[in-house]
Image (cartoon, rainbow over all chains, first blue to last red; front, side):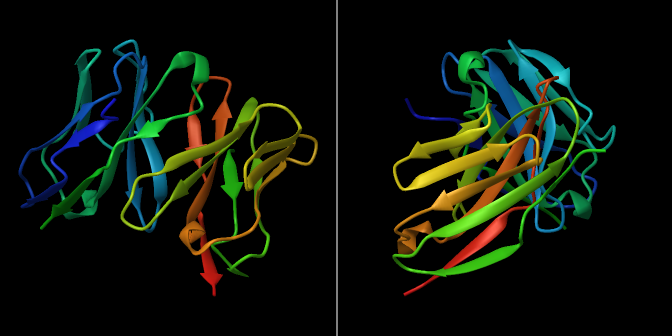
Length: 114
Length: 109
């Protein structure tokens, strides 16, 4: 298996622009997680899905952030409009329900908002 | 409230043993996981403790004591490649997961 795939790997954008991050989980995994990592705040869970349904989005910082999972093999995290404080590495992870705690992380998207 | 505490940095010598502690304050606790992350890389799963006691996986072991709200990761026969950040993570009964801020492990030759 190719593992969790994220795109783009790097994104540089200007404040106010829309940013869309993409994730393809490991085939067969039924949980998908979006995390944000910064030096100041560490690794934060933003939202997670089970069988394509959002279960908990309490970690989404503001209404500017939204996430979708239209099918079992694809998810997006969108920031509109983006702000400099959104600069971070965004990770997507997936896991299989029966081994929920073993999450497989993608390589991450390094986002820089100027 | 829910919080995890781990030391920000630990230094050890190649070939030695090091213990990284994690204390938590939470309710509805389900289990404790450990992840490793190299600079510029993604976190990778190391271990999970659902029950009290020691779990061993090769050179790495993880321990949990629910009564003490405490766990640790033990790394033996340290190698230079073990230089990384190590995160503990708590899973709650609603399946939500919170990560600690991470412990950066420095290994000296």
